[in-house]
Length: 200
Image (cartoon, rainbow, N blue to C red; front, side, top):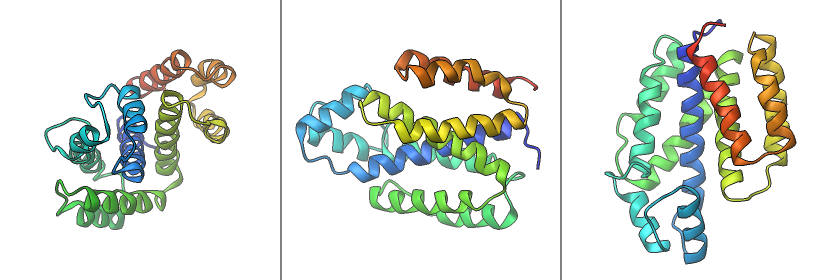
């Protein structure tokens, strides 16, 4: 299947949002104030300790809340109706049908959605996997976590993208691979975004 760039972009962002939700779910509830403050500062969130960060993640009005992040993921799923298999689309719709601001429920559904997408076609999985690993690398750079495995995964993904015509990522990728910092990460992310917006 040959994906339109707009569809590839929706799949990419779905991978990012689901990965973001799953990581936050794995940390929630934050118990240590220092750890919570580090997380909040890394993502520019208006929280100053574990209690305020937990409250923010549960506040459906906050852009960084579980509810809002899951809404972004749902929007991307709706935009993929003609791309995903009928079975996958039906499964995803069933999973998200009754989603609400309950953090535990959203965490379970995010993991289930993740499993459904991973079973789709190679092209769908490629851009989904790209989104997953870009989200992980973004977080790892922000929180100063080990990113060696993520870089290895992205190296393979960039090679696969080149095989389908996305070869203009290589220069920016080489810079990021050699020096994985915020500047090179955003430079590489901009290149990805540009390729979504133009015909290859």
